[in-house]
Amino acid sequence: MLNTMTNRQMVFIILLSLTSYNVITIPKEMAASAGTGSWLVIFIASVIFGLFAVIITSLGNRFQGRIISEYSAQLISRPGAMVLSFAYVAYFLFLAVFLVATEAKVLQSAFFPKMPFWAFPLFSIPVFCFIANKGITTIARLCELVGILFFCTGTLVHLIMLTEGEPNHILPLFNAAEINDYLMGLIKTVGPFTPLSVLLAIPFTKKNGKKSKKAAFFTIIAIGLFYILIVLTSIMKVGINNIVHYEDALIIAIRDTSPEFLEVLARLDILFLTVGFAGLFMGIAIILTAIVEIFCRIFKRAGRPVVVAIMGTVIFLLCLVTDGIKDYTQAATKIKTLSGFVLSMFIPLALLIIAKIKNPKSKEKHSA
Image (cartoon, rainbow, N blue to C red; front, side, top):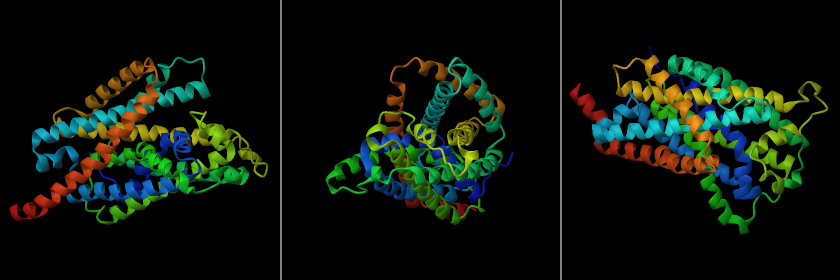
């Protein structure tokens, strides 16, 4: 099975990995930490993570056809690469469990209050497994299709919200007295951007080339602008003092939007949630695929369907365990921020520095 992606498909893989769930939580998180200055904090964060996207794509292009579990062995030794690989598997597994459990809770509270929690992962995880078993090429094509629909629908919904919102709710756009809050708000942006590390588990080819660096950087900038639109329109609809009381502030804000000039879109929440859940499904499938790719590269004799089945079962069982943990979401958010900082920022930067020092490309050419 040939596992490749084009740069255009990479754009939508990044989009769905980052935004599929974070769009729901980022309005509350940013409003609570940075207030009406959230737009500036998010933009600065998008530039920072755009640079780390360039670092990750540089690694992929330097070691074409290989993923982090393979080229890290060349850079830091095989035992070190094994530890690093399992660290990424643990992180992606944590993200997958968190997203599947969250998806179940949102569906349960918004649409199916009488259905037991375990039923949602029971029926959704086989779908994720089916997609992950098809490989990166298939999931890249699906991301391109779903990603276009997700981004266009989300932008349309929030532009409509912009016309109905109260502009005074987002003023002042900048307050020098709140700079310390803005700095603290930067920490809150780590979670929404760190799923970028899934690219470390996807092999690059010659077709990606240097253009992939520009594509990744400007994709992160575009996602940052998308986040800004979401946060500002949500604050405009709900108000800065009220938005912090809702875990799903985005859904509340959308439900309060009913455009009179377009009657067919009178229920924007149904439209957005339908497309939004399709994006969330793909986001989870991407992360599961990253786990499978790493395991299949480490244990080359293990069949892909076996690895997929085992990972699907583990995710299901962990979802049941987390359902009984009090304040799981708050604890998971902190873990996601800390681990994401290390695995999405520090480790890729360190590996690229080591690669440049060792200059493995020239060694490969010399040995060839």
